[in-house]
Length: 552
Image 1 (cartoon, helix red, strand yellow):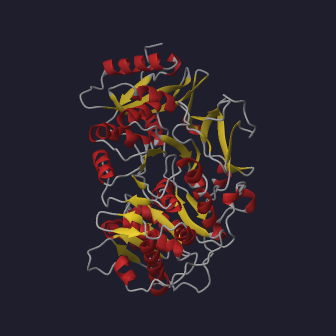
Image 2 (image 1 turned 120 degrees about the vertical axis):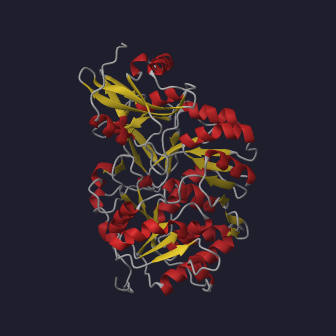
């Protein structure tokens, strides 16, 4: 690959949707007014300086803690490595590959500080998946945790346009990214990007099929920092944050890096994968006060939290998939904490419907976050009466921009974002999640939301995890099917099928019970923990037709 031109790289801007396909963006609150020239990382460090937080801890790890001042200087030095040693220019893409570590966070900050486009990737991706991302993003360079080099090098062999890979998190005497940065003065100012320049490209997690490349500007992310974190999370500089969502996932990037920076708080990165037990123990040892993870992980952590105790913990954020009320109550019983639920999207960067603890309503995700407007509409975009199930439509300071993807037309209609979820809204403005649009089950004329049946099943003591889908049926159009993972000591036999069916009938309206129940050792999930129901539907479509249920 030839050396980058001195001119900015317009690759991403040239592949954005046409103006007619873009979402309308609204900046209705004073705090959403972003200066025309803004560099996201620089702005967050300036805010820390103005608040007197430069010498407070930002990045905590098992071996070293970086203050805001340390992290700012390190980001500047990394930016110098990228621009001086590798000749990168604003707009070039940099692929980042790593887990949730201090080094990965610094690499991300240095990339965006330099005016480059951060393309973070999930640590578990294989060579073929990485090759697809390289093909679409056309990165000029990759920064990679040395422990994850093998798959990326295999992908690079097929895409020589990726000129180089710079490792980090290697032995102390190795010439990795951090070591090379130590030889730089760190005096270069942040790239003077326009607020509307692209800061990051995020790939969706693939819950409904092939992933999409989503583009967000410096303005988008700064506006997102002024929405949910300000009005719902309300973190303070004394908070210590930890969690499981990867930094390559916008839920993790916001929750575990950018939103703590906005608040002047600090983040603990364990430098090792979490298990439910180790996460509880590390949170206790690090005096974590705010936790981010998915509902399934909260459910798995609950017994350890109850046994070990988390006396410092005060806020628990759940997102990434629907939060069953059974899981909410299980966690509250274990910790005394009422979880903060939320729905967001990679396309919108982060959470846009949520309510803080103390303002929740049973079964509801919450109210629309200030700065956003949300409504439940019919197929023509008309708002439906309160209490009626329809499609969620959202508009606010962030919105969907896919990179060169015809699916933009499905997500954005008449300026509104359609995340693909079925909801209903009550008279007080609370939103109740029903299902993904394609997960709504219509059986014999009744609408059944899979998450409601899942919540009922999870209330049975034998069920560890479950997924509910609709499968075709000649008589009813569709029938409800449940795939259950049982806890140890329980047998997945005909007696258990009837037990679970009877349990659901006694818990929710009887017509919603699963006429088909299967048992599995595990459920298909993305790396971020989201359930991939489409894989279960594909498996059901390929399988022979099941025998008719004998129960009415």
